[in-house]
Image (tube, rainbow, N blue to C red; front, side, top):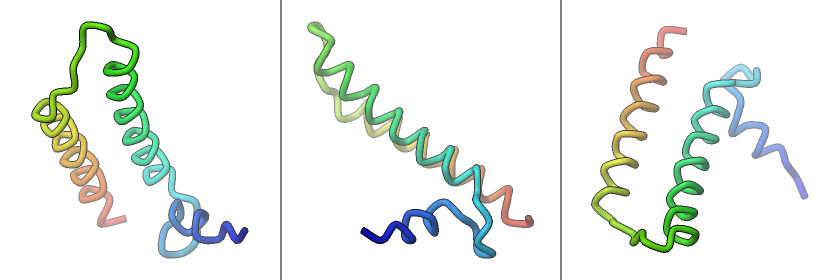
Length: 73
């Protein structure tokens, strides 16, 4: 299996590894994992789509701002 697409996903335009892209990806994975874990393992928790949406929106806004600040680099 060719993994060059994965290397391009986490690298900048010049091909250098980009720590910010990797960190953003890991933050999103952690958010999704923690949400699933809270629903599956938590006996008293139910999935609230509104709270998930608010959290995902805040996460997307924060990551977008992070990349926006790096635009000059």
